[in-house]
Image (cartoon, rainbow, N blue to C red):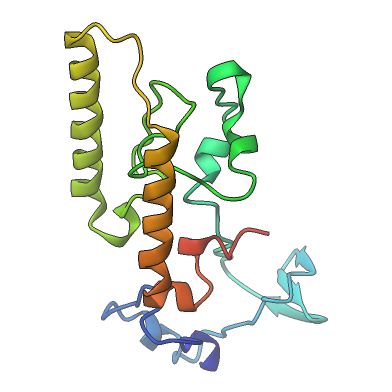
Length: 184
């Protein structure tokens, strides 16, 4: 099953460990089909890929999704002066701590782009993000501030720091959903 072997730098993508995943592909009833060139057609009996029909009992689509920015860009989030988040991020996301964005007051993104959340255990990361957002809101209310947001300088410093650290990591050496390579 060469298709399953990691390409590029080993460890650059999350590894499957000990669940019987790889062993399943050695069963006589299992055939791995390279659909990286696209699925031509879903047929009554299965799939047509590269001109060949494949009869199947079940189709499991693992097509990828925009896990990092997708949920935020699908909402018409508008900040100061009607600025749209999707327009501001046209060249890539910019945040402070992955939680806030300059020009978008009172917007808190839980596990947003630029946060280390996807590289950690998600539940504690979500808890930390919610705790920080709640503390910021509490502080703003206690001091009667109408809004709270990151400064442009803080956002730039954080975004640059994330890029610098990521450039030294294995995850930047291979295409993966971490860096959006699964998004056309």
